[in-house]
Length: 73
Image (cartoon, rainbow, N blue to C red; front, side, top):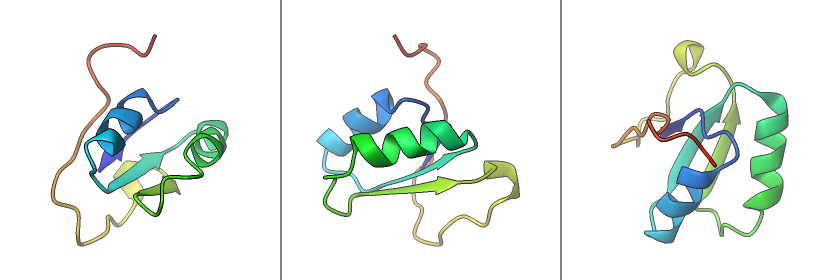
């Protein structure tokens, strides 16, 4: 799980490893951007437009990746 994926820099790297990623993003524009950019993710990415603090997380979540301490460039 990635919380606050923003433009998807970390999302891209996670997908490149073959991971299945569930991303929770509060910003509606960022959610739309992720859906467009990763349209061909072959079912490996689920983007949820919600507040991570107020959302029931999927039961299959095994790892959580918060926003990277390195800002997106």
